[in-house]
Structures are given as structure tokens and as C-alpha cells.
Image (cartoon, rainbow, N blue to C red; front, top):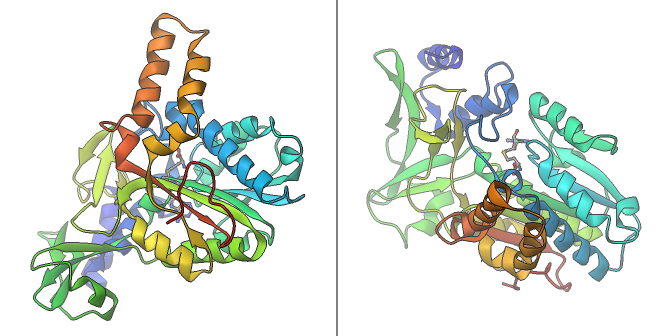
Length: 357
Ligand code: SAH
């Protein structure tokens, strides 16, 4: 048993089963034993790789997308350039480098990072060098400025609850104990008002996931963009409207049992883009159509950028570059599984690469 498993087993023995969202929150962010709280999980030596770690092209194109949005919105003289869950800081560093090509933007941008993990804050400080940065525990403390925000693989790390349809009711997945070890189980079925809208499109045995923190986070971002201007780009894996069990653990780049070693594997779930679009609108912003990552990056010009970066390379370096381009855009790799959605002020054009809904 991991130290966190012992701690959670004692808590369940005393207080009864815990929801999947409480379990996920402890596994990822427990201050002593949480997965993100204690390590840098990225790259070949870690458990998984993300788009900005695959190629600099990802951050450059996102940076230019937000830069064009800034120009389209009349170049506000002071803005918050913000990121949720910045990992190693690579995406922000690549965005900032690309943005230097746009006169006035670097000077206008204050960098704000929302990061829960002290270990990763230290890594971000290293990556961003001398650039002044303000860290935040949550989006609540972001300044009242036009907000240009990115969140890549942030929402998939937010804890989810799972419900299994039973006739007119829903049975919540919980974590209990079997023979002293952590084991998933199901609570008795109950009718649930928050899932009333899913009775029409689900049947007995279907699993629906809810992310309790998502509406407030996406809604607050939208409210700030509606009030001050800006745009938010959300990139993640998932689809439109949650259906099915997508809770998964990754360890050493391989799928693992999410209950076997709490705190030592990355836990994620697919992101429900319909829930994000709803929250953007509820917060007073406009939501774009959900667009596959490959389509989005091609519209922003990844082919031209890839050709340019390929020019100076030969042999293994060229192979790595070509493979990275494929990995980001190919439908068989990240191109279709990953989606993009943006929030922008109603009445303004959507950021480049994305269609209005
Ligand atoms: N965006 C990065 C990293 C994605 S991993 C990339 O693309 O490489 C998820 C990131 O979100 C990590 O930095 C993790 O520490 C952070 N994180 C997870 N849950 C969080 C929360 N509730 N609040 C703030 N940051 C969180």
C-alpha cells in the first residue's frame, strides 16, 4: 500500500465510502502525497507527455492566436496573460517568445499562472527565467484586466463524480474498502435533479460523469472576459456531452489501475466540452464551436511553421520534428481526440482558427 492508500483507508474506515471526486482530489493534490504536489510528471522519464512538451510549434501558434485576438480587440495597453495548470511552463515560454513578434504586446502582458503544485511552480520559475510572474491558487485572484488565457490539459485533471443509470435514478460510484484495500463500489440509486436532463439520452447501465468544479471555473473566466475583454482557449481530450466511464490512470506512459497506487499515477477523465460551452455562456461570454486540435493547428498555419523549422534539420533531428508534427495533428494521434473551444466577448469575432458556435 502507498502511504496515501493507508491514509485514505483509515479515513474510509472511520467515515464511510468517499466519492470518486474526493478520491481524485486527494490522489492528485494531497499536500504530502499527491501526484502533482510531489513531482514533475512530464517527459520521457515521467508518466506522460503533453502537446507543448512535444513541440515548440504548439505554444507558438497558441501565442499568435491570442496575439491576433489582442490586435482585433484594439490592443488593450495592459492585459493579464494567464495559464491554468502550466506544468513545466513550456507552453507559456513558447507563447511569450512568439508574441515578441507583435509590437507592444510583451510590454502589455502581465503573466499570471494558476498552479496548485509547489513542485511545478518551482519548475515554471526556472523555465520562465527573469520574466515577472504572479502565481495564484485559483482564478479568483486574477487581476481585473482584459484576460487572455490558455488551459491545456488542465480540465482533465479536475476531479469528477461518476453516476450509473438505474431506471429513473442514478447510483454514484464510491471508493470503499474490501479486505482492507481500497475498492470501487456503488451507492444506492437516487433520482438526481442535476442529471434530470440526461434521462432522455441515456439508458440503464450508462455511466455519466460530472466535474463539480468546472462550471464555476469556466463561468468565472467567461464573466471576466465579458466584462474586461480577452479570450480563453481550452484544449483537452474529450468530446461533446459526457457518456461512459473515462476515468483513467497513467503510469510510465501506460494505462494503470486507478485504485492500485493512489498518489503515484496520473488520474484524468475526458473533458465534457458541452459543460464548458454552457458555463462560458452562463458566465456571459460567447463560446465557439468545439474544433479538433489538428484542424485548429492547421488553420493557424502549422504546416508552414513545420516546414520552416524542418529546413535546418537532418537525420534524427528531422525525424523527431516530423514525428512531433504528426503527433500533434494526425487524426490517429492527438489530432482528433484533443479538442479546442474558446470563450470570447459576445459581439467580438472568435479567436482565429475557431468558428462561432
Ligand atoms: N498545461 C501543462 C500541464 C498539464 S498537467 C502542459 O500542457 O504540459 C496539469 C497541470 O494542472 C499541472 O501543472 C497540475 O499541477 C495543475 N493542476 C491540477 N489540478 C489543479 C488545480 N485544481 N488547481 C491548479 N492547478 C492544478
